[in-house]
Image: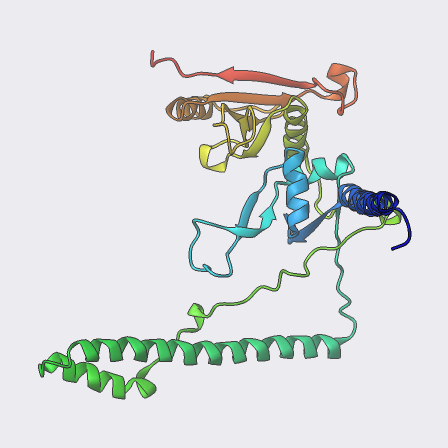
Length: 319
């Protein structure tokens, strides 16, 4: 063979190194593009939700927890293990939009063409009817399988129960009824979620479909201030508060505080204070009364860190 084998080995190794560098560069660019992509927040009514797994991972990496509310495709009739979508608090969604990490998708429907709307409704109802008939046939076959198995188990005996089951099997085609409420409805979530080009960021980030009232502003100021201090927050509805405050990721830590958001000029009845303090003592958590200060009181903008006053409540004893 012509040529030096050493030179051939060097050329092969250099070419493989070039290919590896090209693959690494391509993967780095793809990861950077995925990291720069905005989180797409979809709305169900006024509830912000995330459908894409990549959006959920990005939110988790910045300390936004949310709660899974969807059913699993293989286990739809249980609520122990849940799946997509991820429901966000209003404050979580507002913080993501404010920091430029997300944009709200406002999917408007054109209701001008009544014919197209009627056709879509008809197709949807036809699909439901077809799915219902298919599930009826499957449920009937499952019922027959169960009865046949019972008959086979009692085949050795000639008691009245076996005859009754056989009669029930024969009359099952006319007597079987599959309730409409038991029908499983498949949600098509594979294509849910959209990406945004850079030109859409400024427009979508400033658009918010939910009106921000005084209550929501109070909660958001508290949420933003606690997140800036490194705490993780989730909903505290079952504890009578606004937020559960964790010192780290909720998968690794228990909540230390129950945050109750109230404005500075809001009057809180004494019985409510006693009840929330007593509840916090029972669940071994400290109750925080969180009150954002107004601009004229602090002389600073609302976005400045440290404009929230915290008061802790701990139950000691009855006097």
